[in-house]
Amino acid sequence: MRELHYLRPTDAEAAVRAVAGDPDARFLAGGTNLVDHLKLGVARPGTLVDVRRLPLDDIVDLEPDATGAGGLRIGTNVRNSDLAADRRVRERFPVVARALLAGASGQLRHQATTGGNLLQRTRCVYFQDVTTPCNKREPGAGCSAVDGYGRYNAILGASPDCVTVHPSDLAVGLAAVDATVVALGPDGERRIPLTDLHRLPGDRPQDDTVLRHGELITAIELRDSAAARLSHYHKVRDRASYAFALVSVAAALDLADNGAVRDVRIAWGGVAHKPWRATRAEESLRGRVPDEGTVRAAAEAELEAAVTGDATAFKTAMVRNATVLVLGRLAGRAGA
Image (spheres, rainbow, N blue to C red):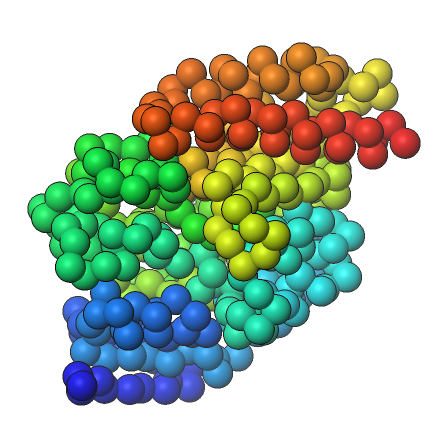
């Protein structure tokens, strides 16, 4: 039994000060990931700063920006189930609602929070097993997954130090609608594009995100667009529920009157250390009619950088086919 200090501040600024001033402190939100790691011995903080009761649990409409686009500001403590059920999210950002409903179980979605979901740590079996070497858990120890069980390993953006993938479904959905993360730190508030929040492993796999110690996600901001309204999330997994993605695809699509792609956003899950924005595929599709051959070729262009082994060779075909499926569905809806 380890002694833990427990704090429950009444405002976000106090929470930030408490964590920023203590290198062994961690924020506690829904606890669906951190509590597991406490039990496993993966996480060993000296202090838990509970932010669950901070008044950051509203979904509010944003004022129009310079382009006239409205949007939503989602508090970090909004529960996953509440966010997925919100009528505005379902109508204006369906990819986000579908990504949430693809994750975990109903009970966990009632507990898990928006900000906490984005900060999940990998579910790599070696990271969660403290008896095995893991650079993410203990820098310099080595990566057991490189030569071990690799079905869930990354095929894009990996490094010799880490080949794991990011587990969040929500993060992939948000990457496809250009979400912005609002973070509060000791030096004030800053905004981070969701696509820049998570890091590729490089030689520092222990750092999952660009957040500094003590920075607290306070909200997620979404801006309305025609593409966001026509969006979809598809997850491929080993069983129908309560399983992490082998691969997933989130896409948002806007078509011109002639059926050509005016705008497109594609994000892949289960293939990298972060939600992977398929920008090369997006660029290939703009101005073209998104038929099966065109989409398949665009996905192949993105996958030219993929590195696979025997355990992960299936992922290239799987993510390519899932991309064809998702964009085909969206194009069909646009033409209906």
